[in-house]
Length: 322
Image (cartoon, rainbow, N blue to C red):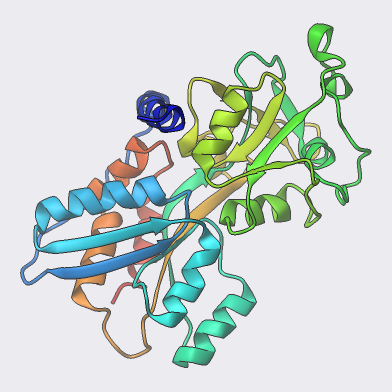
C-alpha cells in the first residue's frame, strides 16, 4: 500500500474511534420510532453529492442493505455542488448536501423538470474550526476567523497572519498561521464562506483539499495549521475551538449549543430528491429516507460523529416523504 493510502487508511481508523468516543454521551431521542421493514423493496439507487455526508451515506446504505439484500446503492461524494446537476440530469436519485441549494441550482432543476426538488433534513452538524492538538488557542471570534481566512475581511477586522495576533505567546507568537480548507465544489466551503467570512473571499494561501479528511490530516501534521470541516471528521490529532459571534459569549461545537442555535456554525445536513407534486415518491427512495429518519438511522448519525435530529425535527422531515 502506498504511503498516502496508508495515511488515509489510518486516518479513517482514528476517525471512527474518535467519533464514537466523542459522541458517546449523545443519545437519540427516544420518541423517534424504529424502522419497520416492508415488502417489495429492491433495485438501484445512485447518490451524488456531499463529501461531508459521504461516510454517513455509506453507513446508511450498508445497514439498509442488511434489511433489503436486493438493493444496490452507489455513492459518490465529491462535493455538494455536484448534487444539483446530477439530480437535474437524472443521473442520481439522492443528492446529499451540506448546505441548502442555491437559487440558481433550484431554477436549473425546475427548468428541466417543471417542479422544484424536495429537501429532506437528515442530520445536524457543528462545522468545526480545527487547530493542531498542541496549539494552545482555545477560542476565536467569527471576526477573527474571517481575518485569518479571508482576503476581503468583510466581517470588519484587520488581517491576521501570525498566531501572536490572537494572543499566543512563546514559540507560537511569531509563527505564521497555516490555512487549510475545501475546494469550491464543497458545500462546506460555501457555508463557511457565507457564515464565517461574511460572504467574503478566501485568501489565495488557503491550501485547498479534495475532502474533509484531508483538511483534518493537514492540520494534524502542521503545528501552525487551522482548517474547517464537519465535526464528524474530528480526530485525536486536532481540537475544535469555541467560537463567538460578538466576542462576549463563546460556545463549544457541541450538540446542546447547536440545538439551541448558540454555536455560530451549526447547520442542518440534507438529502435532496426529485418528487413531482401530486405523485408518490418511488418506494426504494421513500424507504431509504424513512430508514435514515428512524431510530436506527439516527443512531448511525451519532456513530459517524454527527448530531442526531430531535423527534420534532424528524416529524417535520417525514411530512415531505410521501
